Image (cartoon, rainbow, N blue to C red):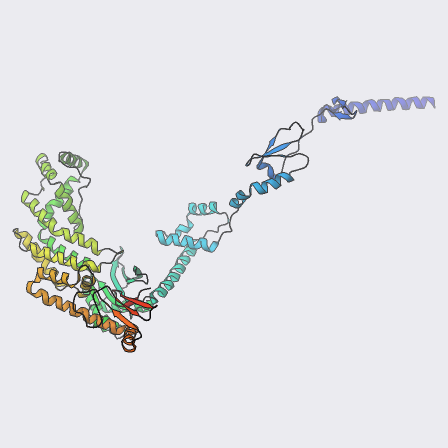
Length: 582
């Protein structure tokens, strides 16, 4: 027994020593020198490890708005708000107090950051409106960087393709068309139309129809009703039927006053067909006598072009001179040296004209006259400059410029779209005719021939001024009928009085027809004269003898006094009707 116990003790001692070696080896390789950690007693006698504790990672989102501060004298951790700079305890109690403060302090920021939900329908409409306003192609909706921009502004956006953009544009067009139809139904007056044919680069013909009217707020409006392809044949009758179909589509076929067209021959056929049409002709005021208005700008172009044909040789030398000085950089530099010797400096450059556009020819002549001395000096120092006009030709060019100047100014006036032009018509045409008559007596034979050609074209279209456009001068309180009589006296001498009287009688006839067509207003006036309870006080702005008992000369229009508290004012709209003033 004793021997057995000693053997067991030796065996257990060996096992303990082997186990100690294994523990020592593992500790040195995997766990570090754990046995070397010393333990010490604190002031209360408790055993505390001297190894530092590992800090736990802060995962709360509140720390993005707070800054951790060092421990204070009380040993508590604190955190400072990055916005208001206030500090709060942030220890073992957690982040509840910090979250509560952030909800109050950062409330405005949260409202700004919060994004409203995207209205996809509004987004699609705005893309379609951008395509319409800026004339973008439908593929604009598929541009890569454009889509990236929209996604950056709002990640919830759903970009669209070109076919979707096309359908949205058509949808907006149909909606706006219905809105315009509704607005046109509310217009109490008549509509003035303009129409023309346009040729595309691939020779396709398009017809544009535009209406002009005065709305209920007395604002001049211009709306394009149609811009459509017109396949051949394009005769006057076919265009008239197409035009009438467009008017019926918009519901204004019975309220048309005038139509302005250029002087192409098929337009005369178009007008005559419309005036004879059973459903359209009877609705025209005064039997359609003033329905057709010839385009003033187009007539001016025809008159000037006929005059320029006579003086083509003089203009040719001037045109070639401009081409020469603009032909190379060396010539431009030499001409600039000639300009530096002039006694005055101007910012205008020498302009090259387009022979088919007479207004560009006038601008070329105007600028060349300012550089007359420079061209003459260039001809003396440059032996290759051979087209410089002579002194006689320069004097003739000056006369040509004086002739063309009123044509240029009046063309710009007639081309206005944001202001009425009827009141400008009579004075402008009169100035042109007076200038042509003066040039017929010029000392220069070429200028006389030029004026003769221009007068023939003038008499073809404007021998008798358009009466309906001349009415604007009579209705203008600044001029009235006396202005027309004065202008006629300068041109027609003894015939002036009779021509003014014919214009006055025509105005009476048109107004009588308008008075009969506006039955509601006439009934009010008749009730006023019969019952005595309603008093009608009519007045009209002319110094001429008007139908007795209906006008005086105090102001424009007339008013109906229904009682001591109710007064209805009416004004002449200028487009074919009397309308109440709201």
